[in-house]
Structure formats: structure tokens, C-alpha cells
Length: 323
Image (cartoon, rainbow, N blue to C red; front, side, top):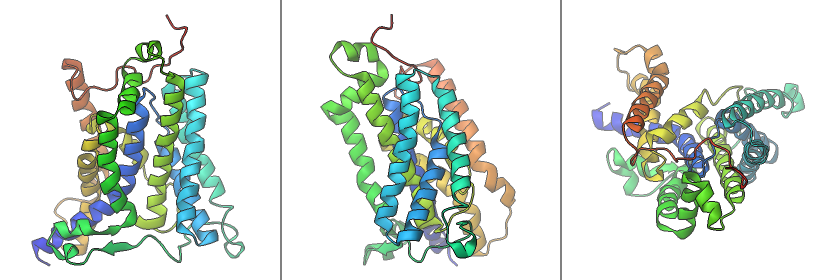
């Protein structure tokens, strides 16, 4: 295998791996832009993966499966929104509770939503159909970058959703409202904006994207269900939001970096290269880079507030009677 073929396969694997991360990261960007920190991504993605797979397995309809995953993600995020916005609970604690609840519930239901022939356990079951890659004639044959045009419809959708999210947040009036709520909710409320309504809406939207991100794993990347199949991707999502500086236009850079590192070991093995770097190191390297990114971005934000700064009101509760 020549180097062009190797990098083409690496990019293809990176896109497949990065799709779920991108959906969940985009959803978290929407949520955090309003000032709500949702650390429940891991549990929400896992529930989305289960809901999508179980629905597709029992109905055979992939579109209904996507809808089910998004609804489950929305439901979990609605709980998070109620705790953080209405009850004004600590957002970190509430998010961790959602992750633990979602993880436990997914593992519990995964053993009860399968076929009777497998004791109703979905673990290890495979789908008869999944979201296959769709190659665009001509473009998909271009060396390396042709991998961009031989992906599933879930990845193609991101080619539109990412620039749309950037345009919406930075070039529209409503996007300005969303950012105002995350930067200074008191001023936004004084201007007649319903801070609670905006925060509820985009926390739920963020959950829908997280559920969709989980479904990308079980309906496309690995068309099966296994306990803990997200493998910590929900936590990487939190780091990717920081890496992208809360800007949808930069999300793709982070997902390509993290997805590429995760896919590298498999691409090397498939290409027949001798593993100079231990596979175990490549396996934990995404999490190591997560720590490095968090450290670097924290240092930058402490030195100056600028394009890399988080929303000023991120993680803080708000009520109209606050002093």
C-alpha cells in the first residue's frame, strides 16, 4: 500500500470516527453558548446509541431510529435543564448525575430490549442494515480528499450543519440573543429576553445532537450494541468544545485531530505497518491530549479574555430576582 492510499484510508476512518464526536460537540456548543454546562454528554450519547440501535433492530427503520435517539437525548437534557435552570442546582453535579443515570439505564435496558432468542439481550447483536457510505462519482476517486466524498449521509449532513451553526450564531439576530444570554443574562433579561426559555431550548437542542451522536456509533460506525460503547467520547466532547473555543467553525478541526489519533492505530495495522508506537499508547493518547488541551486553554483564558474565552456566564444559574 502506498502513502496516498494509507492517508486516504486514515482520513476515511477519521471521518467515520469523528462524525459522532462532531454531532455531540456541536450540540454542546449550542448549550454552552447560553451559559449551561452539560457534563451529561457521556450518558446522553450512550442512551442515544441504545435508543437508535434498539429501534432500528426492532423496526428496521433507520430514520425512525435516528428520531428515537434524538428524542431520548432531548429527554435527558430536559431533566438537566430542569435541575439547572428551574431548580438552580449545581450544573457540574447535575451533569455528572445525568451521565451516571444514562450509563446505568442504557446498560440495564440493553439487556431487556432484544429478541427472545437472545434472552432479550441486545449485546452483540448486529443490524441487518445500516447507514452505508455513499460515494459521489468522480470526486470520491481523488487521492486522499476523495474520502470526503465517500461517507455516510450522517457525515454529509455535517457539511451543511457546521457552517449553518456558525452563520446562525454569529450572523443572525437570534444567534446574537443566544450569545447574549451566555455572556450577560442580566442584561439580556433587561432587554426583554427570556433567559430561561433560551436556556431550556438550547439545552434540549444540545441533547438532541448528543443523542444523534450516539446513534451514529450504533447505526453507522459500529452497527451493534455493546455496554459502554461510547468509550469516554462524551468526555472528549467537553474538551473539543474548549478546543474549538465555543466556535462551530472550529469544531471540525478538533474532531479531525481527536478522530485521527483514535483511528491511527487501526489504519497502521490495516496497512501492515510495524507498530513502532505501542498500540496502548495510541489508545489512551486522545485522553492525554484532552488533558493537554484543557491545560493550555485554561492558561490562555487566564492571561486574557479573547476569541478563546468561554461564555462569561457559563456554569452560573440565573433568576430575575438575583442581585
